[in-house]
Amino acid sequence: MQATMTPLTAADRCDRCGARARVRATLASGSELLFCQHHANEHAPRLAQLSAVIDTASAE
Image (cartoon, rainbow, N blue to C red):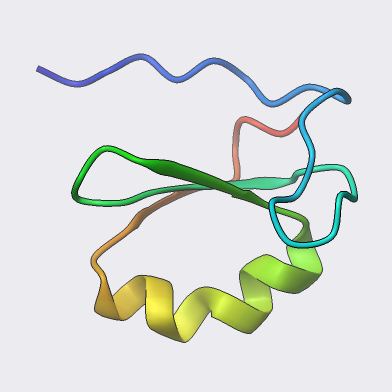
């Protein structure tokens, strides 16, 4: 079963810096991290190692 992700809104903030979130990373544990584009790019290699599911289409 695949969970339905709610779209990111202007109220969603980056977990690193507080800027508007543009990317949602869902870890294998089910935990979610929100990142601005800058921090998503910075952490992309580690997120790939963790097999995180990256969702950029939900940013409005």
